Image (cartoon, rainbow, N blue to C red):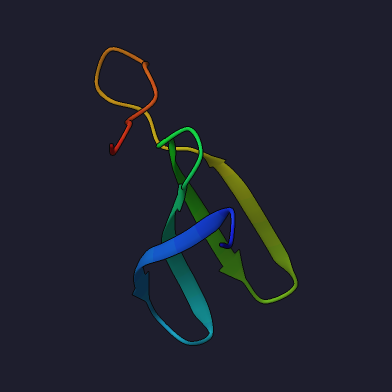
Length: 53
């Protein structure tokens, strides 16, 4: 089983995706624009990680 599962994807050149860690349930946002990219936890309005069980 793969650790991370992509649950949302938008765009081709400028990409935004949401990935879920299958072990912890934590959701992450991945963003890529040209040659720059980032991968960070997705947070709710209180600053806590969003967890999908």
